[in-house]
Image (cartoon, rainbow, N blue to C red; front, side, top):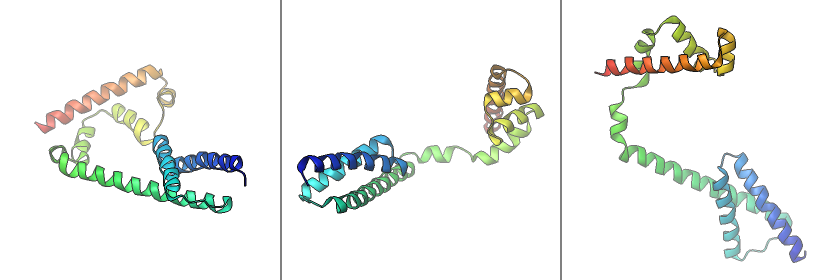
Length: 158
């Protein structure tokens, strides 16, 4: 195989690997970094593989590199949560314990609005159509309900 054809194959593989990693859940920047790392590893090993073996090898190395990075990031997030933010976790009461009584203090219309938005996951336009009001009115009513809920939850904390 000629050098130009091999370079073209490698370039095509770089794009394929990036798309593959993105389709498997990697962020675009992460996928770009991993693909670059994979090719650096291959160059450092001075490994020359035939084209039919290059593709599977690169995919395997890219996937294992992504998994390693994902696990490392997850451990980092866990450590930050455990050791750097314990006061945030202990200060806040569980949402389920305080939210139920607070929701009970809302009117039936306010609860229905929240149910349409979060239980049925309707858009503002769909809620507006359901309630036969303008989308701007839906948005304003939701803001008022949020403020009311916040006020109720704060008064229960004190």
